Length: 152
Length: 179
Image (cartoon, rainbow over all chains, first blue to last red):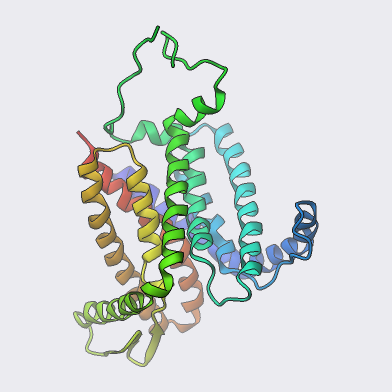
């Protein structure tokens, strides 16, 4: 129980720090970076004319991903490091896709529901994949199918 | 078809990958999210009155909860005011996206249907309660520490959103799925 509480506290601390860094300049830097690289990527994939418009608050979804990954126990340093890099890249791709839905929404005040849902869930889903070995070991055994019997 | 040693023939690598629970589960969650999101999108015009009521219900719930500690609460529609500091509860503040994500996670989990049937409503209720607590905390921060409101609004959104889902999901697995 004490270990769980320590992990919750570590998650809170990491996410607070990252959110603070994000507010203190990280968001501006990331916005500039996105504006710089996104148009050429959109052009490569045939979304010509697509541009990074209004800054989306949802770009901050990397914070819970990093927090979760850093406090997950029993992950090797290699898997954690590769997972962190790959996960952040997936989230970056998610931001590019999110920005495209903004263009498609015709300047609607709210994002489409599917895009919002996927964007909000993406850090969690990426974390599930990266931390899968540790998570599956930690979870109580669910009602899973029996091992396949040999077939002829 | 599998080999006697339990391994899947290499001629079907994609199927083998998809059959792996560690990958199948996140993909199923994603699939359910797309289905749920598409359904909500399609029904959005019809759902508007119900969602509006949900906004008002959330505002009333926050005011009722905070009234346990203070007499400075006022609500007007979706506007909830604590001692002169007001917030408007919009649809993204009622926790519906969190509930959809959580429900997708529960439905995709390899658990008995009875456990899933209990898990979805019970977890959604827990998320709603957490969300009321989140908004109440924001009201207190906004009233007493106004300069920090934007920071905590952002923090209590994405970071606690995921923490809330992970926490409630883990609680459901511990309580309902464990055998």
